[in-house]
Image 1: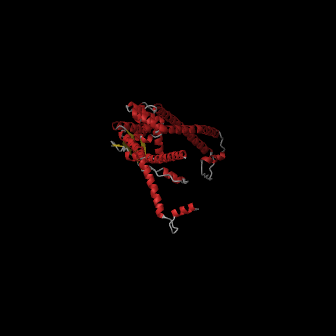
Image 2: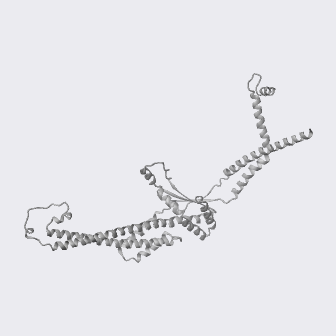
Image 3: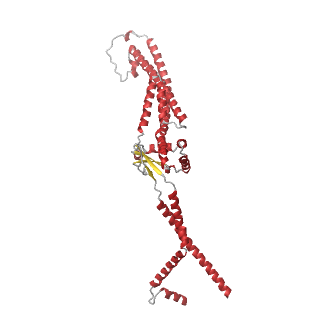
Length: 407
């Protein structure tokens, strides 16, 4: 009871109110206690925090600098087209072409870094694509019209940012990457378009083949009908004049009500139309077959040579040489039209920055060193407090042992 009273008297003044001076004194004593601990272990704290920051800063200072160069193209891709472009550029086959070209040009170090970045999926740190203005963020909407409108928005510019070192090699590296974008990537689009054209012409040929039997059957029936109508014997009353006027909405569907002579003419007219339709379909079929054969040849040309560094310029030369050997006017016209399309694709890749500046990438040494300083500092302070506590426990244990021995 006396102990409780003494403790109460220590905490409260004579009037029963808290002794704020005593509490403040205890707080100051605790603060001084911790400051003494930090001062006692100052060497540990300084070495544990300052030394790592200095080491990291020195490493960053001695490391060679990265350099960046940005190429700007006047492209207007939609969000879907942009994602397709990224997929084609980051395709394993295309990246192999780039690394092989880098090795051929004596840029082995950058080729190794690119292979390593591919494994870590961090290639964007070396080659980054971005569009301006950025595509708007897709909102959670169930309205297909709104979603389609957002997806149809186009960018105005396409940037290719290349980061490399040393400075003397960055333009050679950039030339290989931009040449890949300008001369290789379009071939993937052409290959896809040719595949679609092949399917389209096969579908058209299949439709003609499907309708051929029905048209031939109708033609045979009309010919048989004509032969029978010509063998019909007319009576004398059929030759008499009549004041009856027949009116039809569609003479073709009601020709059996016409006089025999007109019926024969109607059947002959239908036979002519069927024969012309069959002839026209056969001409279309032959044209589609020839165009299909041409598209398959062009597709195989790209397919066979895509594994090598085959460019759109080489493909254009192949097309012009192929045109010289074509004799059929229709297919030759189709090939001429396709060559114009390839030329438009080549001219549509417009580079705005012909000779962009090369800039050094900041090393952000101050921020990195500060982060490295703060984290070890906290660890060092915690270690100092922990060691101080261990020493106190050891001292108290030793003192108790001495007291027991003295007794």
